[in-house]
Image 1 (cartoon, helix red, strand yellow):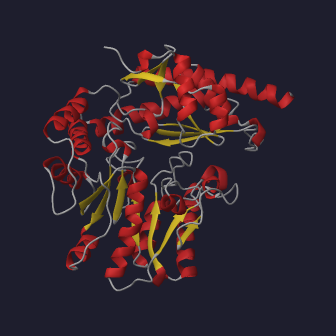
Image 2: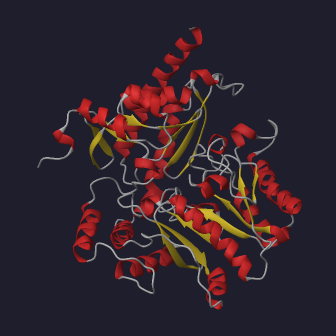
Image 3: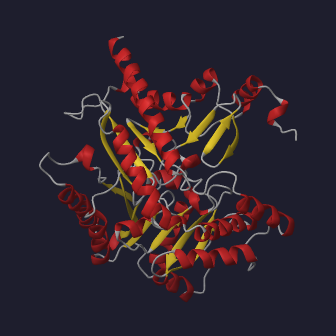
Length: 465
């Protein structure tokens, strides 16, 4: 079969890309000078580019291809739904079978009483929905002043104006303001990089970071705070795993001051941490939860917001519209694929397999392969997530200077040697497909060690230049 890609040479595709395509989160000037890597096909945990290179995808696409590439069950679900009902909206008092069944399936796997689901198309849209829902909820409760949402420094909650406002990444805040008002932030629970002193235990640090929420609530007034939001593990922030004391204390504080607790599960959801949702891994139960990415294993764009019975009861008690939604909210093809994905995960018992088998092996092998490397200051992770801090001096935790750009140097060596590993500043992060095998984990670790060796050599040369 002739494909669009096969009608062009690799160089011509790169030239067309440079002429017409603006990439997300990209220095377009630098990319156009280099030329984009053109991915042509994928299977299992591997990608192939237009130059014929085979690449182990250590990032599952963008934290999302949980069940691996080429799954016929998901492809067939899309095909069959396209033949029956390719599109209809869920506005105007209408629905359709795929979205009805998907809402039920999500309610069955979410913790506690998160029994109602609102659909959107991306994690960013889900976060926008969450902001409107929690503020609308408190307004219906007769407390419109409760509209401040507290998030964390170095948090990522999407790239729309609302999501960027909520997130705490300074680089994003340099572009695109003014921002949505009534957003506050507290410190992140990054023990390796931000412990108060060398003697402080992880447990004490976790409590200190959580109690920063209480300090912020008292500062702005509990009567003005609608919700606290956080990712169970900060993904785009560098895979920062909080101490085990952190989330239970956050939950206690939210209950004490009657503040909604929101879990952003866009990355952590659907088995990534060895549980269906990351909040289950860390022992807290949210009032509201965002999800995307692994919901369809990335095969179709879809996201969702699950809300508990408390919020739902208030919404249903008022004879009024919730004036929010998207043309493709609950798109029938996306819903059919997401439903097939959940059923596939259940049939293959993938969450338990990650929890009891793959994740322990992955966490062990990453440390065996890299912990003693001169570049590696610290490794942290949970489930099939890992964050690796790259340092110039392990004993003092001294980072390389910004002009060395150590993370991007490492990322480029990984690409050139058949491995995708993402750079987040000076941290390298991994999030492979949940279906990765022990042999493939071994391959990933071997390639990572080689790339760290090459990165160290490059950094030393740059320091001497």
